[in-house]
Amino acid sequence: MTRPVPKPVEKWLQGDRNLAALLRRCQLHERLLQIVRRHVPETLAPHCLACVLDGRGRLTLYVTSPVWASRLRYCQPSILAALRSDFPVRRFQVRVGLPDSIAHRPPPRAKIPSPAVVSELERSLSGLPDPQLRRSLGGLVAALRRRTGRRSQGDSSSRGTGLPM
Image (tube, rainbow, N blue to C red; front, side):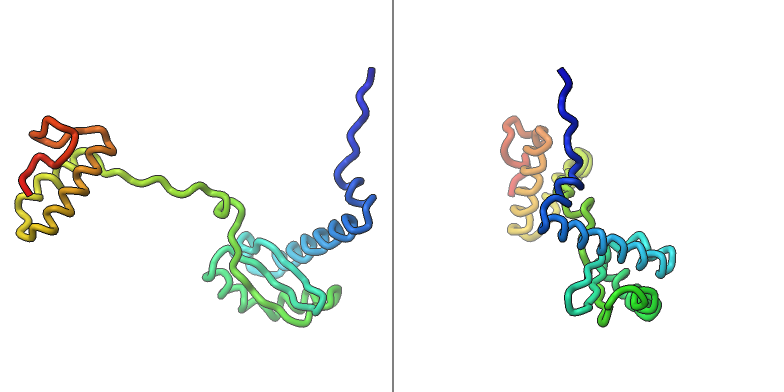
């Protein structure tokens, strides 16, 4: 018994009038992006993420950061000259967008200081003249000790800093 060969996604997209129009629009935007990348300095091309041409002739170029957006604005005349012969571009704007690798990146993990740094913080508590600062720093040390699973110096419990506040 042979399994039926699945229909390629592109065939599905072309079979529906609305999906076919969407596919053509995506292909147009990809073609615009390739042209833009060819007409900007080599160092700027990787920072061009996407191009969108709306129905009023406004081309929006999405880039990775404000720094690159600023630099790419200087390329506007050459980009427009390259596009206007084949596309109805009237206006050009640059916007900052996030690349997928950043947009879907998990939040950074908290950086826990080494046990030596935590011990040094704990030793510095006794030299602090301000009692409120001493309590706050003592709370930080206690939280770091709990986070690392280590007990305070001279403390038999897992709470506190082991030093008088």
